[in-house]
Amino acid sequence: MYRTVAQLDSVMEFLAAGFPQLCTRVELPNRSIEGRRIYALRIAADRGSNRRGVLVVGGMHARELMNPDAIVELQLDLVLRYLNGTGLVLGGRAWSALDIKLMIETLDIWMLPCANPDGREYVLNSDDLWRKNRRDNPGTPCDGVDVNRNLDIVWGVTTSSASCNPCAETFVGPAAFSEPESKNVKYLCDTNQIDVFLDVHSYSEFVLYPWGHSPTQTTDPSQRFTNLATGTCLPLNPAGHQEYMPQRDQLRFQTVARRIVDDIRAVRGRNYKPGTVFDTVYATTGTSSDYVYSRHISNPALGKTYGFAFETGPFDQNTANSFHPTDPTAIKRDTKAGILSLIQQSICAIEFIGAMSVSRSADVQVFRDVRDEFLATTQAGRGWISLFERIQRPVLGAVLADESLSRDAISLLERARELLENEEAIASTRDVERGLAFLDSLAERETLAGQRRDLATVRKQLKKADGKSVRAILKDFLRPRRRRVRKRTR
Image (tube, rainbow, N blue to C red; front, side):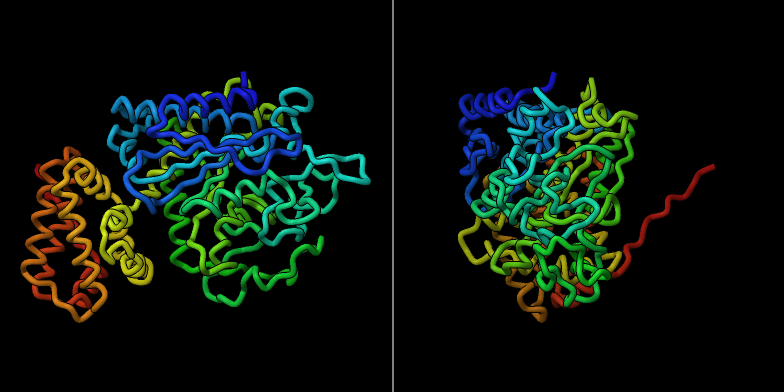
């Protein structure tokens, strides 16, 4: 009923051979402990370089059989629906053909369905509750390393779910990245632009994000994991350590996780719980989602990667059945909905349009700064962030379909960057007119009433910008928007 490792690989081989314009199968450099080849699949309709990347990993823990199956099935769903120009319906949640198109044409979607193939084969043939890889631990009668405790983030610091005992289910291994399976995750992050990461696990119905080793706080940047002793095989020291995270990142994790929860609930009513690993599950160290997010802190030269993890499916009164139920169909739909939600939220119209430009506008950091350092600081500003994210759909749909609108979008982005780099700069009547004309073109093509309303809201705000300085325009975005109250008729 569950696919073997060979069957999982055959799906990716089929996609890469049959649709090379969209799919590339990559053999990762580190074979498993038992010598198995490990493959990842890249799905992308190439439209230039430097695109945002998403990496989805499954099967780190051997007994969690249904998630690798869900991931390869989603690979098939994405490719076939993109080629056929159709949408994807999962219970009560639907993604349109345009939604699928935008994912594949604006992102590099990387999927590593089965990170731990030796463990999976051992579960299918010998021990259905095996968790680790198949490392022989010298000098002990015990085998295996928990590859999701083996990454280099507070590695070797013990918790109730991370152990230095080679016989423990959560054995961290002899050193950080000692295992080929965890090294492959690092390799994919080292060799590709990965902006968003997801590690899919079972069970408990959670949507998780950093931190896992301690509570998160947003006020004291001196409390960093880089100052903690690692490899101690002792508990965290100091015991009261609370890991710093910038508030803008915390808000981003919280917002994305809530939307994922909403999209999963729409499928069939399951209520996943969002939260940090530490607060929601338990304290742990050496995990993939914490590691990928920590990379830009350990090495400021690296880009930031937002790391998430799922725990899919409920406890079903039986541990084995909770990890691999007799019929996982419904849970796999929830899982695929959660993955699609995260992929969709990884799209960034500004970065995609900026990458199409040959000028300095390819550097879109000024837009990130306005979002993170200005708009994200107030409730009104965060409302505008949400609105701008919603109208990415009509913006990118038009840009991908119409060359003239693509040129207009690039030109407007370049002008917006010039203005934002000087807060005393004045938005001219010509600037406003060009922006309004672009919004009107989008509205003419948009069929969804909600997005037409969003475009109208932006249009109304843009009209106010004529003759104002950038500083004054930005302040306007922090003022609460008045909501129209409809009068009831008797």
